[in-house]
Image 1 (tube, rainbow, N blue to C red):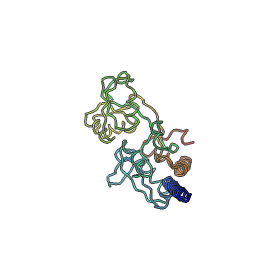
Image 2 (image 1 turned 45 degrees about the vertical axis):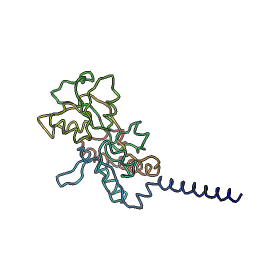
Image 3 (image 1 turned 120 degrees about the vertical axis):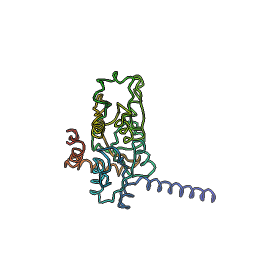
Image 4 (image 1 turned 60 degrees about the vertical axis):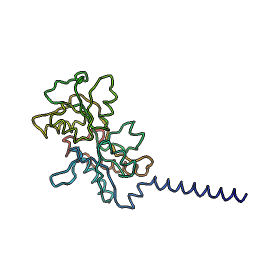
Amino acid sequence: MVKRSILAAALTTVCMAALGATAAKADLLSDITSAKKIRIATDLAIPPSGMIDSNMKPTGSDVETAQLLAKDWGLELEFVQTTGATRIPNVQTGKADIIVSTLSVTPERAKVIDFTKAYAALKSSVGCLKSVDVKGWDDLKGKTIAVSRGTTQDTELSKMKDRNLQIARYDDDATMVTAAVSGQADCVATSDTIINQIGVKNPARPFEPKVLIQNFDLAIGVRKGEPQLVEKLNEWIATNLKNGKLNEIYKKFHGSELPAEMRG
């Protein structure tokens, strides 16, 4: 009986310790508050959402969104450089606290991370050289479409097996855009904003959106099991959509306002 009591007590201690560890792990908001610092995964190679300016400082719509968040919360901000493919692993492994990096909300991603409410929007298309005659999906047969690996565009095109699309995958948006600018690719699948940026980088190769893939909500990504952090982020987003600050940031870099239904 004594041995059983000792064993039961030991098991209880182990269970309580495990529960305590789980509780601690699941309170990322407290960790951020205690550290007085927030680590935000942001791709700094996808203008105008994220980029490095002439003074070697981060800038862009996602950068200013992250900066506004840190300022409002009174926190030091650390950018964790990422790509489309590494954004989610960064929060899953604890390298970053949250993701603010043109992260579209999709059912597949919602299985592995949690999303806040939308803070911005993304129109996603297949864009080609203006001189290329493309009016619909059938016109893209036989044409190679460059895409950044791990993005929603990659996922959506991969589903379209019946369309026999030729897909060339690049590790990030920067190398994909370089391929288009340099003449290695005549079509790309990405946001309309990035498509329009190609002609800015090389006026001799102007691109334009040709075929709509989908309109996506952009949200902040958080690892699973952090309801307090998601709730606080949602409150912050709601406040800054209502006061117009998030719309101002978006319009500054993208040249258009957020959808009316998002602005409220």
